[in-house]
Length: 371
Ligand SMILES: *Cc1c(COP(=O)(O)O)cnc(C)c1O
Image (cartoon, rainbow, N blue to C red; front, side, top):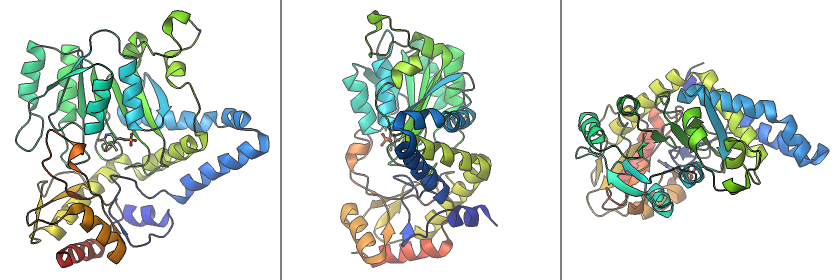
């Protein structure tokens, strides 16, 4: 069986056409069952006893994250998502709060940076918003910030940023690199051993909603000062225990760990190759559609395709009609997603590995029929 067939047959039948993995992929039956099984176990033995019993499953999830990020020597904490992870990290940041990130940085990330007292300067990028690694190396060497933040793959535009090149520059300069891998994990190669990397379960890894992770290199973890409990109380807690304090949906973490295991079993390189092909298939299907312009180059190695209306179509309305009339699920990213790069809302198609040419042709035909 092909990867596409295995991936599709591992999950419940799809109602319509799902082109929305950048928002939330379809979970496998195994991931759904593992989370449900954990909830049943909580009812049988008690939530806190069940949590102890789930420790090996969660450790397997952490090991998978370590493998996917190149962070063997890391503290890996589960969070409620990517935004929560960035807030935890920046809230614990030691010393100077000055960072560099792309002009197309994700809007909610910019708001978390500001709320934590960070000043932000722009990394050099070309007209499409792609990082210029040589210019970045020169600027970072001349005036190193306290950290560099890179969203390796954005949610409003499917450009694969030169993550490995920037990671090499940051390592050479000794500047911590923090990576937003919400869209990149399970999609692009993220095994670049950054200072910290974080992401979500529900996107390309296809785990449950409401869970994510933050992986922190031990060298950085040692320097962090988590706000809670107050450091001056000197409680005997490790950095990861402090960051993971509080109530959590353990069942969701179990489901995420199962989805990570499935991703490793499919083969991360095979998934990447297939997603790159799915991106080409999608762009071929919508190329030349009247009233829409495709942002990504045809061969961009990502499965995110962004359509900009050129003839006045309203992406929010089009998305709603695609669902109501064709059962085709897409995304409508509004301009606040990347306030310094987006001028207007767009329509995003983000199919997973199982999409077929027929699915994409139906999507293109439905879009063509839209006014
Ligand atoms: C979805 C997304 C986030 C936020 O993830 P949550 O898990 O919803 O907090 C952050 N960055 C990017 C690039 C995203 O696509």
